[in-house]
Length: 202
Image 1 (cartoon, helix red, strand yellow):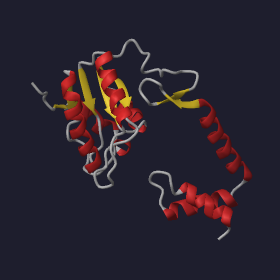
Image 2 (cartoon, rainbow, N blue to C red; image 1 turned 60 degrees about the vertical axis):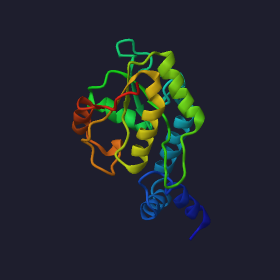
Image 3 (cartoon, rainbow, N blue to C red; image 1 turned 90 degrees about the vertical axis):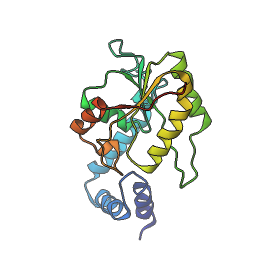
Image 4 (cartoon, one colour; image 1 turned 60 degrees about the horizontal axis):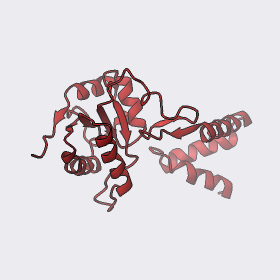
């Protein structure tokens, strides 16, 4: 196989949900398709690199010229209700459900006991600081339904309990082993309405 093509396949296979065979099909399509297909892709990637950043307050994606993001600066939202997610893509999914009117905090990672991966202390410290500084009344842990997310939720429950905020989680309306990114708005809306209380330490 040509080395440039092999490198493209390797890069594409790093994307979530893209296996080796899918990466090969994409690479061959890009290599044999019209030049405009490659040019459009390169241009789109350049625009994202130049214009898209993580919100300095919540961690979701926003334009470089709009930081903090539109959600963080929306005065009509409940700024005492914080929804914690592990990936920025989950925020778009929850917003599509149309029922959450609080604000967000994206961890950009989660615990993985099998791989020995921990939440970096700075990420936890930033979350704790935000909860205390902004006097959050409720913290909703909107995590995926998998082993890593369960471990992350359990860890966060213990760490956040002393803040005095009410700690809740999504109702178990999400399929086991699936991610928020693959859930439909109706399922997410029901899960949000049926969120449950973890309880708090005395």
